[in-house]
Image (cartoon, rainbow, N blue to C red; front, side, top):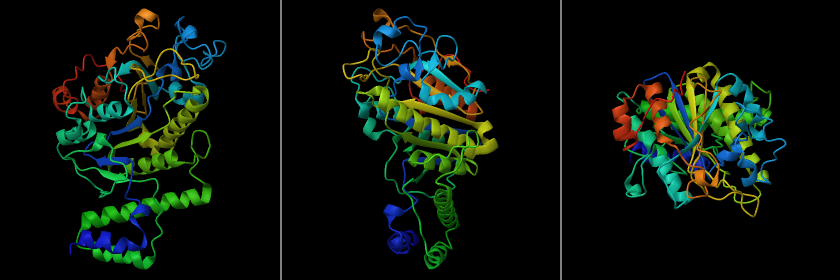
Length: 399
């Protein structure tokens, strides 16, 4: 019997795999550079026209008579043309500091079918179409494959949710916010003995246990960590994931990816979307607080499978669309700007007469971010990381 077989079959019998910290929708990877990248997949199709509202476009009011109040639409003004959704008001200090920005009218190459499943797969695979998706790896994994000297410092091999974005030949780790470890001293000692002659596996496993115990202790004592910017304590899986990610990024980990749900807003959007945006806001603030001075070397990229229709539907929501918005944050980004050309919201300006017209492939600014953070050549990005993408001009996302 191999040590790993014995570990899974025996030593963890007292803390079932369902309760293990080695399970997750968060994926991490270590690398030889000092900058950090966090990619957050916003599942459900974020309505970019509601998050970053083009109140300077006269057509907006007619398209969204109940979703957006014309009397208050510009209260969280960004630049005289765009205003932010009130739910992200706590992020405005980041905007003012240049640590938060938006890129409007972007999308993946996915068109017309508007399926969440296909859209998310294309987003995470980083390819142009659904053909051959079943055999594809993810674009973050291909990034790791293209960089020499990448190693996996941790050994989280069990996954409740397999995120395509980090799946592939390069090693990556997984952890779950469902983790609640309560190892007896005897069980912990047994783990150490079983893994004694396998230092990488031993060290990674014990590090995972310590992190999980620290998070559990912090939540038990204070219900979560207080954000250093606002003094608020954030609870929930999104805050736990952000704290764990920040803890790893302060150590060897350089790339983190996880997802947030709740952005599908077919009905009653004024009630549902603020909840999802609040979770996103708390996630970003928790990341910043947990990273400390590492925040200055970090870029956060928030992407979604597609935008939503320009016109609201009959249930005070919006349907699956095309063009949307990408969010970038972190001390490494040049924020304080809404980037991208604006296509307009007149009927003749809309894609297929219904959606915000996408004017740039979101893979291009994401590719330039990797180029700036990690020094990956544009040729590798265009051929391997995002095959077939035209990077175009550098949009200057980074400081």
